Length: 78
Image (tube, rainbow, N blue to C red; front, side, top):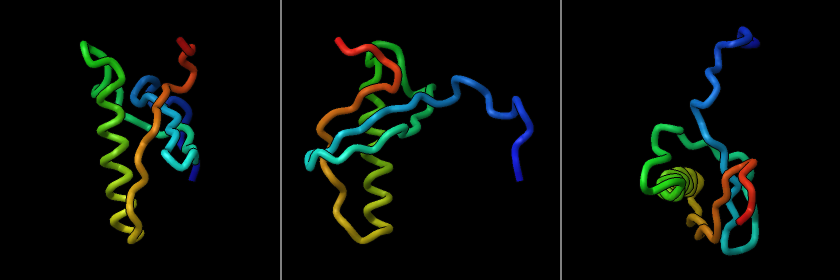
């Protein structure tokens, strides 16, 4: 069933592209916005995504891949 328009509040999540050590990429990984900002900037996203990967790997019976880099979707490259 489709959601009603306006029921998904904007800014609730930030989206990240993740590149792993084997050069595979996962796009639009969601991280709650409340974890981000402050002095650490986007660094807490790495820990949150690593925890998600660990849970997924545990359920699938595989080892989690090491993260090579994380970049926010839509952010300008430095």
